[in-house]
Length: 308
Image (tube, rainbow, N blue to C red; front, top):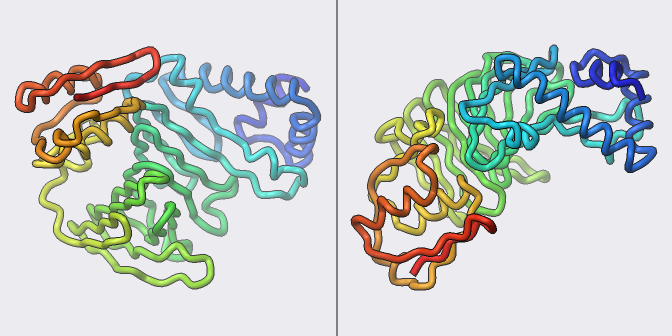
C-alpha cells in the first residue's frame, strides 16, 4: 500500500473505492494493520508539530493543550472501527482518546467546539453532521454546540443521553463510575433515559442549572459558580468534599491506583482547595498532609499509591 494513499485517507480525501481498498488491505494481515497504525501515528505527529493541530478536512480539528509530549501524542489518534468495515458502505467512526494528565480541544465537522478532559474518549460517525449529530462520551467534556434546529445534537453516555439544538454545557460521565453530571452554561438541554426500547425525558435544564445522578439518585439545582469548569484551564477546585472524592478524582486524572489501608481517613477527612494539573499527584498529597496527617507510599513505576 502506497504511503501517499494512506495519507490521503487520513486527510479524509479518499473516494469510496479507495477507502474499500485500504480497509481490505488493512484487514488482510496483522503486518498490514500494524503498518496502518504506525503510519497513522506518524501522520498525527507531523501535524502536531505544525502548530499542534490536526487538520482532517472536512472531518474536524483537534487542538492539544498545553503539555502534550510525543509519547502522549501517540495515545491521541483517530481510530477506525476496523472490525465493522468489511463493506464499502459500512458506517465508519472516529474515536479520540485523551491520555491521563492531558486535555484537548477539538472542532467537530458541524462547527461545534468540544473540550476533552483527562482519560476521556469521544466517538462520532464519519458522516457526522449530514443526517444526525451524535457523539458518544466516556469521560468529561465541555460542549459549545453549533445551532441547528433541524438536526439536534446528542451526547450519548453510559447512563443518560443529552439532547440539544445549540448551547454550552459540561457533561461528566466516566464509564463504570455509576455517576453523571451535567452543567448548563447557556441555552437549554434535555436529559433523556438511555433505554433503547423507550426514550423518556428525565428533566430539562435552563441556564445556570445542574443535574447529577449518583447510584441511581437524581439531584438538580443552581450552579454556585463556574469553578467546576476550571478544568479547561487545568485547574481543579474542591469545596468541602470527602477525602475519597478527591482521591478518586486525582487517581483518575493521573492514572494511579490508590489504596487506603485506614478506612477512618476516608470517613473523617474533608478537603477544600484547588490544584493545577502541572502540580503532580505527589505534590497534591503533600499539600493535603498539612491539614490531614496521614502517610503514603508511592510507586511511580507501577502507578500505585498506598495511604495509611
